[in-house]
Image (cartoon, rainbow, N blue to C red):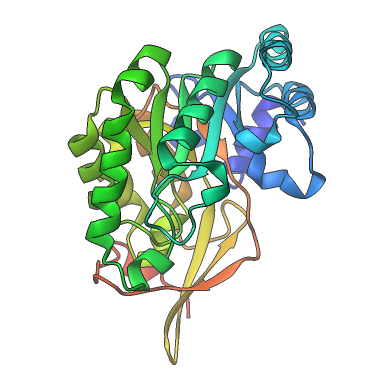
Length: 294
């Protein structure tokens, strides 16, 4: 697969017209998309290079080791391939049910990820607060938000010294875009940014375009995927689908992303076939309701 073929796939084969004359997009993928292969970092670099991509988002558990010699080997392989790496870790909110206490404290886990990013030359590291459970549990979402802000503030100096931006994702039903933005601004926009995910707003019936507009000033990286949304007798369901086959106006979204976030790469995160029920915690109108499928 060549670079242009990959771009066409990203926007459902209709990328050309709204993107003509725009600055080049840096294209990549999130290693989570092909996690079933259980590849490690060096294999991801080899694969991304074979697709002539610009970037790859490598999760912390994709590394065979965090020893300096191994991480230097990963960086060298990426440099030789002309590939820019990004980092990724999981839940960093200590009050969230998703948080893995085996990783140590939230601060220790986040710093470990940032240090690995620094070693491989990554300038951004994706992380998230939690998931839908954080909106439905006994602990209110506001408490989780303040907990996350506290973690970021506790490692501010170390993060700044490492020169890697923490990129908080609008994850699986945990946060509205406005809440993600609030965390960034409260913690410190000089060292905290955003991973914009185009598929996750559907969890809370939030329009992906509206989410982008809210988060754009702080977006440093992305996950792009498409969703189909439809009504049921119990409310609304959505399903992640192949890009270009869903409810989202993907060409318009990509064009707006290029306009608002020219510095951020467009990373494919593919999870087609996964179906979920939307959660109307705080009603947010879909700006393109006429496109809702029944």
